[in-house]
Amino acid sequence: MDAHPGTQELLDIARSIALEAGALAKRRRDEGVEVAASKSSPEDVVTFADQEAEALIRRRLAERRPQDGFFGEESGAERGSSGLTWVVDPIDGTVNFLYGIPQWAISIAVVEGEPDPTTWRAIAGCVYAPASEEVFTAGAGAGAFLGDVPLRASASTDLSQALVATGFSYSAERRGKQAAVVSELITRVRDIRRVGSAALDLCYVGAGRLDGYYEQGLNPWDMAAGALVAAEAGARVTGWDGAPASRGFLLAAAPGVAGGLEDLLREQFPLMGELA
Image (cartoon, rainbow, N blue to C red; front, side, top):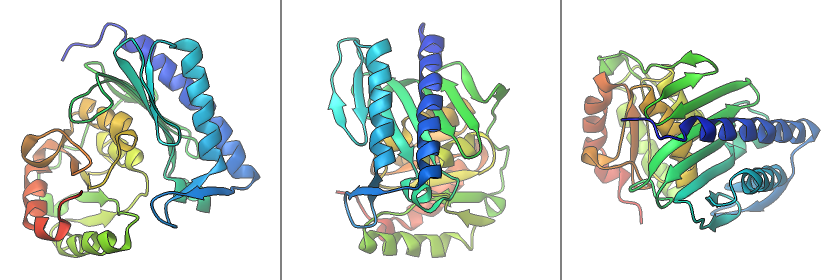
């Protein structure tokens, strides 16, 4: 895939704003976190830092790219006139952030087309983890990087030795079904991880720290930047049967284990179920 002509400029914007928003969120974490609201369930929380960070990101993008659209977790969507939309998760891994667990990140991506992962073309993305000061970036056709170091997905071909991550729904009923899948899967792979940030899970696949990651129920802002990092690092990023990744299902894995992992998960599909 050829790089989009404006990829580097867009990537520079995503990176600089992510660093600024990350510094703000880290200050708020150090000062003490307050819960602003709950969303889908009492466990699905929003902090004031989420809201403040997204407001900052939205303001900076409006200053630098006023013609572009915006789609953020906390403040919704706004159409633009350029055909590009910025897809933003101001703090991915909010529960980790709330508890002081370092796996949380700012995720900023820009996509061409509607902000729908089944149809968009991701152009550039940045995932910044302030606690570790790791900056993951990717541009379509331009590769993926951790800082200045190129990323490459794991060369693993043995599913039994694969380290696999997943995430869980905020719905207690669905979590139970997902846990049943994990109980079956864990005997077939090296081990399971639950990082708590989809954006970082995807970047970790790209960095070869994980051999695979799967999840149901991801929103566009959860996956936009991280999926591009994983894909540009050579991972296979897909939905079921080669369809685009979506809310229904996302799999990101080293090419050598992706097919086998999907087959294992397909065996458990009655437990996983369909998402409405």
